[in-house]
Amino acid sequence: WKLVHADVLRPPPLAAWLATTIGTGMQVLCMSFISIACAMLGFLSPANRGSMLTVSLLLFALMGVAAGYCAALAYKAFKGAQWKSLTLLTAFLFPGIVLGVMFVLNFFIWGQHSSGAVPFGTMFAVLCIWFLISFPLVWVGVWLGYRGTLKDPPVKTNMVPRVIPSQAWYLHPLFTMLIGGILPFGAVFIELYFIMSSIWLQRFYY
Image (tube, rainbow, N blue to C red; front, side, top):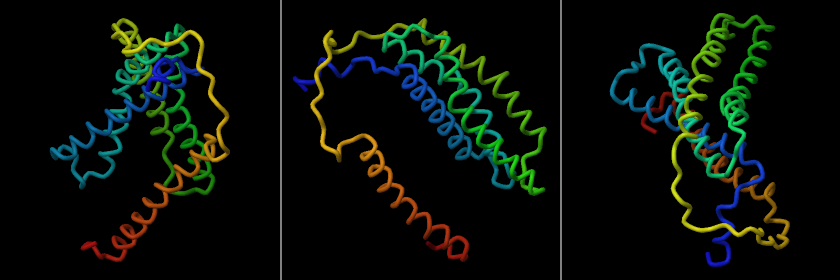
């Protein structure tokens, strides 16, 4: 800690992207907690199909305030000044990727004339929720976050960054991300395989 404490809080080169990731993560976390709490309290009945998805979608749009607020605080801590770019990234980056993939897949389902395709009215309603509810709330959250005060950092950052020595090949970020993702994915996949097989075979005692 004595060697690296002066470089721990150094702003990253892509501060806006990191702040956007933090804000979207808090948005998903708040949405998940509220959705689970509503389900535990009995507000979401399993008999009403689609209620959980509808509530989660609406909560994700409403939690845009939390996304903008947390992203703005993180970006302000990184000494960022382009708050307009931060607002657009937080509102459109990750939701845009998810909705874009969903729309492209839905077009292929339409091409097969499947009954499982999402209707055009539902897609338009999702876009309206995104642009008319989520984006203004993200803007409000960023505005509130920039007005907030930050606590003083516990350590000071050196003006000259510390030289990072060359790392071995197995410490490369791509390799560590690949290995670090395969192991938990394999464990979860095996567990889910047995659980889903038991459910489909009516062996609920599993």
